[in-house]
Amino acid sequence: MQIFALTDPREVASAYPCATETPRPFWADGLNLSREWFAANLGRHVEGFHVEEGGKVVGHIYWAPSEKALVPYRTEPGVAWVYCEWVQRAHQDRGYMRALFSAFIDHLKANGYKGVLVGATEYEGYMHYSHFQVRGFRVIREGNGGKLMYLPLSQDSVQVKPFNPNIPVEGKAPVEVLVIGSLFCPVGAATVLYLRKVAAEFGDRVVLKEIPAGPEALARYGVADGIFINGEPAFFGPVTENQVRTAISEALGGS
Image (tube, rainbow, N blue to C red; front, side, top):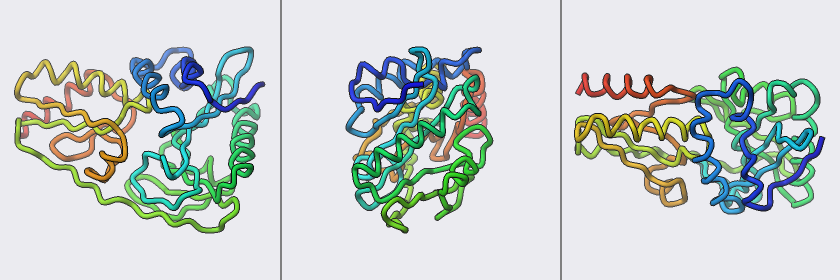
């Protein structure tokens, strides 16, 4: 087992072991798009740790300092935000995540971080809150199927305040699809690829607008990442191309 921090964009060529498992998940269609985003944003809006076995990346923790994190919260400086973590199923329950998380925390402590925040979920298998609870994270906010959790390092509490979402509907077409970011995770990136294809099939009845993730998007929309159909959030979690097509068709039928 070897654990290391990502410091070179070339190391991103093996990022997202969640999308390189066997059998290949269909949402791995977005892998290349996500790797391109990660390489362009390494050291700007994302950092990472990988764990290797036999020269193959089998697990990751991706995160960012609060000053650079793309999250829908105003957060005091000196805090780490965990975006996501994963160890491939064949290597789970063998101590890989424990060692990976320990190396991550050692790095944060050595660099004077006050604590760690994570937007955990209530979905089994995807950043479930119980995995963080056993490490000492505590829930500080709940809502919309998720739990904001905090792990103190040198500071017992943290100043964090959510942005107010502002998703406009411009009336340019019967169906307006707004994509904000959504390239960091291969699940979201695959959905973006499907949306590009499906929106084109419907011609001028569907308008697709893509906004790059960044501070400007956060300030304007109050959202760091997401897909919206006529102003409403859509497509949380993996969806197929046919599911995207069905959602667009249903939105047209109700317009």
